[in-house]
Amino acid sequence: MRRAPNALPAAPGRTPKPPGMYDVARAAGVSHQTVSRVLNDHPSVRPETRLRVQTAIEALGYRRNTAARALVTRRSETIGVVTARSALYGPTSVLIGVEAAAREAGYFVSLVSLADASEKQMRAALEHFLDQSVEGVVVIAPSADVVEAALKVDLRVPMVTISALAQQPAGIYVTSVDHLLGARLAVRHLVGLGHRRIAHIAGPADSLDSSARTRGWRQELDAAGLPDGRLLVGDWSAETGYAAGLTLARDIPDAVFAGNDEMALGLLLALAESGITVPDDVSVVGFDDIPGAAFFSPRLTTVRQDFHALGSSCMTLLTSALAGQNPSAQVLVPPQLIIRASTAQRSVTTGHTVRIDAGL
Image (cartoon, rainbow, N blue to C red; front, side, top):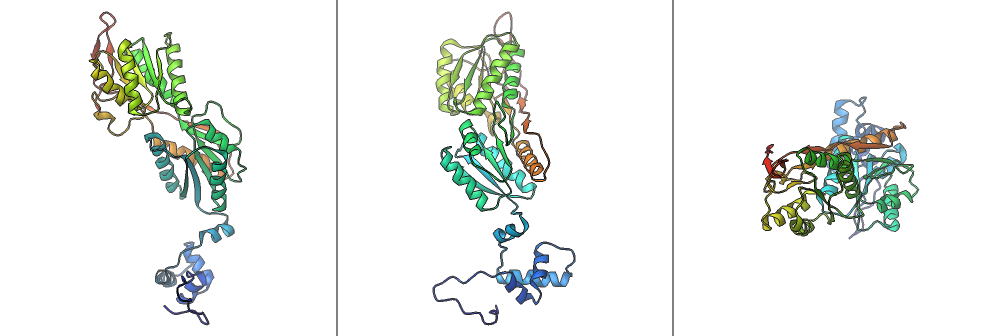
């Protein structure tokens, strides 16, 4: 590679300065404006000139300075995403859905995962994004304290939060799977099968998703004129589902709505070990439709979340706000009830159930 005229060699042991746009222009024998047009895919560049510039870029190993470009164009083509640190299926799937939707919309994602939702950590994350000139921010908020921490930071870009908030805060856009509707669909299915005593294994008390699902369970029982069933609280793990199952086995209800599929898995094992057959003795419904739910024993009836649609709704809100439009403050993505073999019709006269296998 030719050294630029009058350029000094790099000092021994020091990393040479990376090539810039002017280096590419000199190597290609064009102006730096022409290099800029090639980088921005401008149609006025002749094919042979474009090829010469692209060859120089490849030979020099030139990379565009996106930070400098953002200062000029006010576009970084990047959004910041804050999420609580979790290996659970739901939060991880939400993150994947947002990243995929962002790429489809032409954005890269800068990610920060928080070990806790303190205002200090949230402020550091959001200020980091502002230093990167992100065009917008998405906060995946499983609990209200994550949203509250985000709201305390004075952002100069639009913010969308993915959270099952019962009340809409001012100044942000919100999208979520409709967890309340999903719970109502699950309980409505059980009521329609003739079940009257319907218990619920809820997730953690500080979880917005769990709170919405518990409200849906109660609302649907109330709509059917049924009293509240037993409420047990887990932590989303199969272990707590198993513990709840051992408790319920001492006074088995007609049906159980588990707050997620992992807890449903633990529940199924506890019932089997207690000599209780699903769905002959009790029907079970989960929530999430995790990979493998169709291969539980029995195959699990559950509520499926559409994470791709959730990511798309998030990006639609964000891009609409960036375009100066006034999008809806809240968008709910409807879930889908998936009926399999863990639920069955209850006979009014005998109290026994009749199997209905809806397949995978």
